[in-house]
Image (cartoon, rainbow, N blue to C red; front, side, top):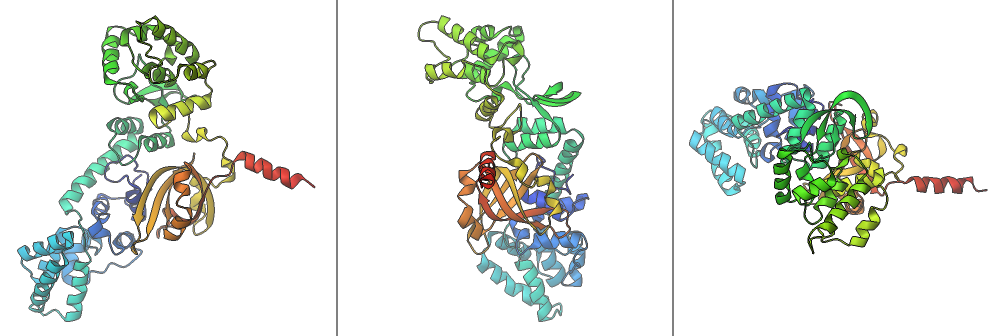
Amino acid sequence: MIATGNARGVHHIESPAMTSLACMADVRDIDRLVAIVSVIRPGAANGLKKSQFARRAQGLEPVAYTHESLAPVLRTTFGVVAYEEHILQICEAFAGLSPGRADVLRRALVKQDMAKVEEVHVEFIAAAKTRSHDEATIAQVWELVAGFQGYAFCRAHSTAYGVEAYQGAYAKHYHPAEFMAGVLTNGKGFYSALVYTLECRRLGVGFLSPDVNVSSDAFTVELSDALSGTPTVPLEKAIRVPLRNIKDLGEATLNRWRNERQLSPFASVRDFCERARPEGPEALNLIRAGAFDSLGSSRTEHFWRALHCSHEASAGADWLFREAKEDDIRATFREEPTALQKLHDELELFAYTINGHPLDCHPEIAWHTYCPIAELHRYHNQRVTVCGLIIVSRSHLQQNGQPMKFISICDRTGIVECEIFAAAYRAYGLATVRYPVVQVTAEVKPFDNGAGYTLEVLRVEKPRTNDTLLTQKTRLAKP
């Protein structure tokens, strides 16, 4: 699972950079996993060391230690300086530099204090010459040491992270629903909740709406025979979204709900309103989130019953319409919301969808005209056009200082990382902000081992729509 880049949600190794490196290095043992935790850090990663480590780890490039004295030091990282203690060990093994001065060099490299680095450089050369090393070898070893600029981890630190990452990956692989429910409850991962819900769907785990009589304060796993409106195998696992995740639901109302639910279940919307006493837009948001659906009746009926209860309250306590226009809300609930309206409500209230895929919110897009992300592995070094929802976006600077951008997009079949280098970013960067769903024309750039790829973006545009295609067909049909 780790080696194929499917560790989203696993602490320490879930970012796009880490999942890509895991693919590049074909991480299938604990030593390699421990190593990439540090190799990804700035000190170890500069100078294309990530690619060097990945190629050497798989035998795609010969391992070189620069000098035989470094082989015991760098054997587990295939000749790559990956851990901070490597600086100390190289200085001692090759030059015989004292541990104290070697540690001064390590700190100077981490802080990029080049004056101090140069000071120790002189000492390094002098010490190495006393061991009869020739100048060319001394220069090569120093280049290896001095290339480590910026922080990394020591091996003990990397090991602690690597073991924890392996444990998390084990839990995700064998208990995906429970693991992802924990990730969503914790809410501290690299990605937004939207990305984690997409990962759940990729794993075949569906969702259940909040329920005033069922929900706890955590995302919980339940057995369900009807997940998110899609027919499934009976008793399949699904994740119940907690009530507390509904937008604008205050802690005071949640406390009253918890206390009252312990006494007895809620029998109706009116019963809930009288006992939990929701305020402001809370009752309306509970209805739109489907929290009363299990009580029977339609959401429209729930609204009017809540409205009736609101008007029966004391003067000035029309909590259903507080901070909202009454006429607008009344107009909204004159008829039952459509499936599409419910999805848009869920996006507004949770920032992700529950009863359908987020892409269901964009039915106008001509999805069938694009290459599915899951099929991109068939088109190495070829130009493709894909379409997807932007779920991760981060700006970056190239080595020459020019701005670029990384985005991750998803369709119904998967997620892919896209690299928008400076030239393409200048021309099309605005489209990545303007449109939530984008059409990307790019070249598929495979990793050296062929086990993964990224997209090198050529163009980013507004996606094609079904209406556009229909217009084009009409024009072609005219004499």
